[in-house]
Image (cartoon, rainbow, N blue to C red; front, side):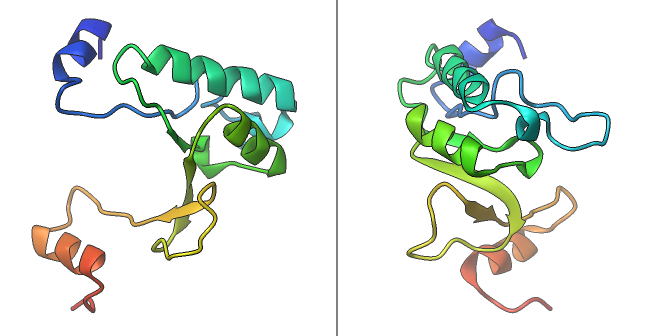
Length: 126
């Protein structure tokens, strides 16, 4: 989407970070974040927050690229000002979970509204 298109929908949608240049994999198909220094990761996270600030004044949430994170990335995320971060670990968030390592539910475009409702309301599947 273009910047003008993003501005047009910024009153409806909230834009948060998925990093700036770290959303790539290496030759072994692992997130490149694993091979970057603390300062490189911090710079990227801060740059992403600045870029998104033109659409929303509160850029507090991060989605680790390809679910890749380590202790260095977690520290950089906190130091960059993120309040929480989402992994690709399947599951529900519970009170007391580490806000920098939140799980997620997977809802596919082929899932019905009923399936989505069961997932988010703790009803059994079936």
